[in-house]
Image 1 (cartoon, rainbow, N blue to C red):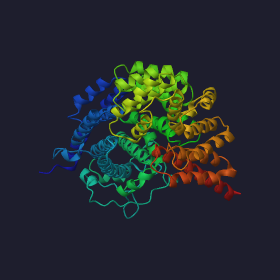
Image 2: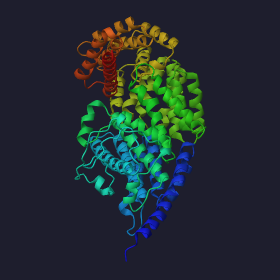
Image 3: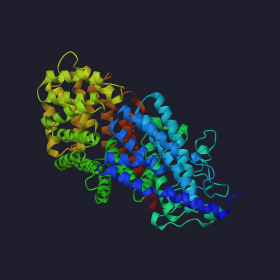
Length: 610
């Protein structure tokens, strides 16, 4: 005998209650993780991971975070296995037949399943092999289709809740589709997805999570109503995944974007930020993760790829606001203290940053991964002050204890020791670089080439100084140096008698330091020298495109020279390839050209109003 509609609703309500009762516990587990209780968090999640999709997904998230922090192959493999296990628990099709499962639980299970796909894709990309990129792209596509389906269904219940709704499938009357689909349909690559043009921000109003109204017609059509509280959790949960997805894809190097388009998805940075902001302000278990993602974007990505001109004041202001919001909940969190130190460093407050990194290291006594990241930042802060003798102990420790890119730390030890006068020991450190190389990433290929220059003889102190400053330049760290340090850099470099093949690099360093100091005429002279001295076969292939980029940015800031600046930036984009750090310069060129386009649009709009 088939159950009546009311019996079905009662059963559905009971199972949904059992499902959601773990939500608060999952949030507690995430809070434990961020409040320096890494082992306690793992134990909490694993003790409930077999019976609860929320706890199983939380356990996978903890392993994902650990793998991201360590970059160790065994941690990556362990995290991938645990995420696969979490998927099996979350899969809608694994629910016992006859169990009345509410629509809210079905949707949350699908979102958690998509989260696992996304985390697995990001971990797979870290392996950096060709097959890994293909497999990662396939996982990203499956995650995207699930997020897209879930967003449509949740919007059908409570209305659109993002100001821009990407790639919504619509019915023939233009309404958002809200049919109940199974997970396997989302991951079946034979199913065609009908895509319509995205809505513009002014076409849809944002619905604050605490002022939600449920679409009553949709609820009447569904045998299991979704409560306002469950709806808020669903909106926040899908926003976190959606936001992370959009942000990640928007940061793919421009030359790889066409492959993303071939796979059927694209990323919009504004959508990603908006969705993550919504998720971070919610009570969802992933709200802290959304907040950390936003911190990572504002404090790491924006300055690194030069999304903003100069010192990234807007990004740092946003990061500072996020840290202030988080302080009450995570006052002694090593992770948040680390970001606090990072923001202070980026603001140029090096002394304060050092104190905060030391505090974070103390709080992370049982979390070696975070402690080592703080150790790196401490060494980096001393480099920014040109305090080589204080930077060296940090890099020596990292070379011995860190499993991430020991070749990089050996190289840092080599240049630092060389600056301090032990050039023979510097050569010994450079000879260790090839022994530590594992995957020949772009960074490791650069290190191999530089270290090979001193295979037959030791470097000079002047060469080591220039090689250290080159790293500061490529990481855009000159913007965080104070005026005294920048003038000292110019003075020290001017006195340097470097090897002939480092002469173009010397001019590039001088030009960049002058640019930050607003000595525009001198900056242009040095940057032009860097290009001329590089010749037709430059010893450092990255010097000419970087020098052209810096010139393009300088000219673009002057209205009279803006056209020339744009031409130089396009030359870098179109005429150079295969040089060191090409991907990061591609980002910066793309960002600079986008700023020029924005200025043009603003000028056109201003002219039209007159």
